[in-house]
Length: 164
View (cartoon, one colour):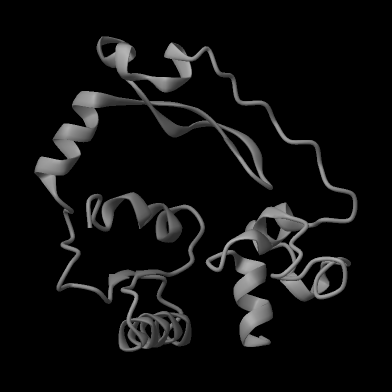
C-alpha cells in the first residue's frame, strides 16, 4: 500500500520472473496466483497488482515522503538470512533521541545457526520446507526450532498447516 509496484520491478528486470501484489482475502490470494500462473504460461514475466482497491501502482506518496523524512536505510539482521546490507530502516540522526536502540544502548547480534535448520534455504527458495531435515519432526508449530516455523505467517508453519 505504501510502496506500490515499483520496488518489485527488479523481479522482472533482473530475475526475469513474475511478481504480483495480492491482498489477504481468499479471493485476493487466488487472483494473485492466477495472475502469476498466466504470466508464467505466457512466458512474460510481469509485475502486476491483484489488490488495486488498496494498492496503487505508485503507492502512497505522502507516506513515502514521511518515511524518507524520518528513516534512512541501514544494515539489518534477518533471522535465517543473516546480515543484509541496507535492507532495513533506522531513525535518522535528528530523531536519535527516540531511538530505543541508542537510548538503551542495545545491540542486536546475529543468532547462531541452529544445527539441521534450513530456514535460510527455505526463505531463499533453494529448498521446500519438507526438504528441511527438521520439518515435521523436531520442528513443528507447537515446538518450533527455526524462525520459519515460529509464527503462523512463517513459510514452514504455513506449509505444515496446509500440508503442501
